[in-house]
Length: 257
Image 1 (cartoon, rainbow, N blue to C red):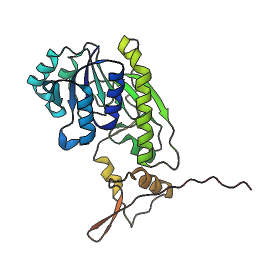
Image 2 (image 1 turned 60 degrees about the horizontal axis):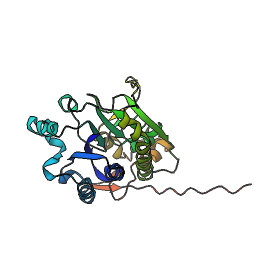
Image 3 (image 1 turned 180 degrees about the vertical axis):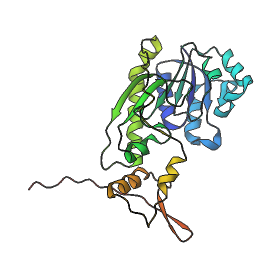
Image 4 (image 1 turned 30 degrees about the horizontal axis):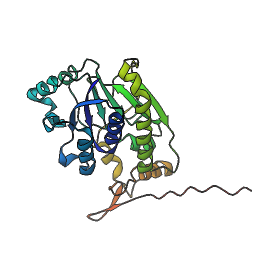
């Protein structure tokens, strides 16, 4: 199995390490550019992949026919997209006899798109991770495997993110042998159900209006979902200044009566 690996950040690095431990053949990499990624993780992916620099491409280059031609020459059987943030087009997908598989940290069809850890909390929907075949839509392709992840009332966007990452690695490890052998077929998603969010959608919930009435549970969910230090999240305005909010949750078992 000749693999074109498209990945970003720690999740991609962990999956890549697993593939290399199994001595899988990585023929090329597609990465986020330096200005759109975690640089230390990017360096680890490049170092561990051990592919020639001429076989390393950037996500925004996949629209270039010349780049697609170079990828085709690598004769990849399958594309694996691991936390990869760029949309791939049909002309790219045609290059892979075994298709392309994406690992999305959401329980599809819920939370297609960006920040599924946030929207699982805000919308109170099932969290999870899904391996799916890539089609022309965004996170809409047939589901190969998925697992639910429990969301606790004291979770923040950060703590849920970490658990989703761990669950994603575990799911991939279990599913990969079946993917490689062609025994893992996808089931069609119910596209009329679920949800989809763009990156900019979190901006609509981040601005807390001090003159607006909120249901207590809804406001707490926004604040905890957007708590992910060191990143900024929800805020209110004090004159011309943003005042950012982070919620600390400390669960403690009630004493028996």
